[in-house]
Amino acid sequence: MIRLCIKRLHAALVLALTLTVPIQAQEPARQSNPNSIGMQFVAIAPGEYRRGFDGSGQRDRQFALAHTFSNPQAFRFDSPSHLVVITKPFELQTTEVTVAQFREFVEATGYQTEAESNGGALGCFPKEKDYVDRFRKSPDVTWRTPGFEQSDDHPVVAVSWNDAVKFCEWLSEQETTTYRLPTEAEWEYACRAGQSTWYSWGSDPDEAYVHANVADGALEAAQPNTTRYQRAVKLEADDGDGVVFTAAVASFRPNPWGLHDMHGNVWEWCQDRWSADLYRRYLDDVPWPKRSQFTMTDPVMLEETPQHAYGDWRCIRGGAWTCAPASVRCSIRTFAEASDATIYTGFRVVRESQTDATND
Image 1 (cartoon, rainbow, N blue to C red):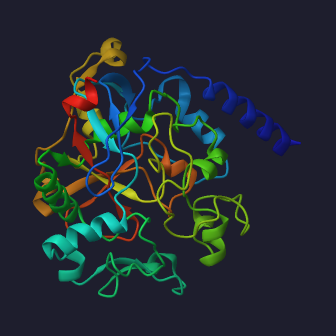
Image 2: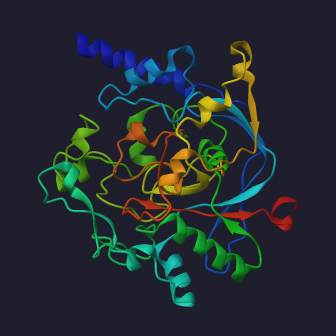
């Protein structure tokens, strides 16, 4: 009886939250011209949105009720929420950078990734009994050999932030236009696509499996007690999205602006340096009555903090195939050192908006 009541409460809650309206109606994003190596882009207009996890109205409790079978979320990195204004148009790649696209860069330049030159990337070794030991660095793990099968259409992994920046520099020279990593603010703006819900599709975690490659029954079957640590339901082999590791880009439904894999598949590098308490520091000197309307314009965190004395920590966004639905929400954010390379991290690029793409 109690379980039935919880399920009914969960269904009602999901329906109510899915109907949440956007902060501000956005001009629809439009497909832009592809580049010379086949990358597709969406032209995104300026606008305003609420960044971070909105904890008002006990939404943290609501999130817990809607994700009854998931591990608890702390929201300490993605709160408090605040308004952000994006003043400049930009073009965001519709997918993550693929193996084929990265290979073009390597073959044109002879570039060697940091993992290839520095002892390998963090790989997955499922035969290890202890879950923590399943992920470790190995010289056998690189973008060419991540430890699982990938086609040219899969997202490139085992690339560091520094590798991603080098790719952008090369592409900028090739195309005579500026390519770069997105800022955190641009990334979340694009991920939300005008929505204020936890995910770009709404607030039901079970809908993740048609929108995102996340940890599911297929991963649990291949690596027992992996997904189970994050989610206690939908763990049968035919539950979920059916993909164990990375999926070919654009295998899942896009968000309302035509962007694929903003949730799951691989974590994505952003420009910003990491600051765990950044959102809280924004509001330190803002009186409580004014906090709900506090607004940042085109924020990007590039300053070094005391933490950066121990490494060049950079932001990653979006979650990966290793994450349960709760951990691929629009606001999720964490970090890695700029030279780190893992089999669950890749990137997508921004092409700075071209006149013909924004004014035609």
